[in-house]
Image (cartoon, rainbow, N blue to C red; front, top):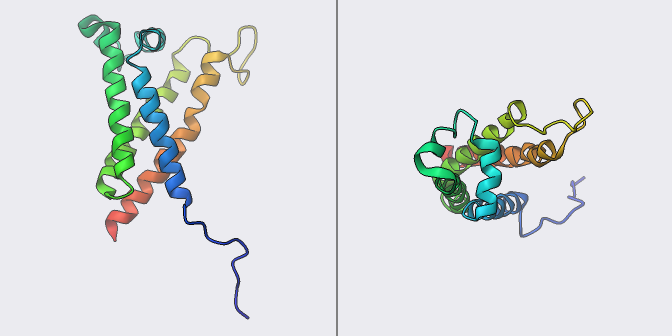
Length: 153
């Protein structure tokens, strides 16, 4: 008896869809860091964070946001190249993993994680905003392992 795959294989595989989605998000979010309202929003979370706080006195709100934006755009571009060049994908995915690990660490420091008057897991607006990064981290981890596997072949 021959096993038959019940679903026809698509020309567009899941890996390509995940790559395209995370590239779009990183490029979009990175470009937004150059807008004044986004720079101010980032400042509210990042200014007192040990990893970013040192930038604000040196290069200001716009400069710090631009640095973060350039890192996000670079990660997105490298992940985009990863479909063709696994090493670029590996570096970009590592940058994406680092990005989302850092943003998820704000759960421990940022105000507004838990809704006022409630306890965890009742997330406030900041907590809800950051929670999406769990899925984005998972996508970057998948693409990281995929690039690593493709490099070992």
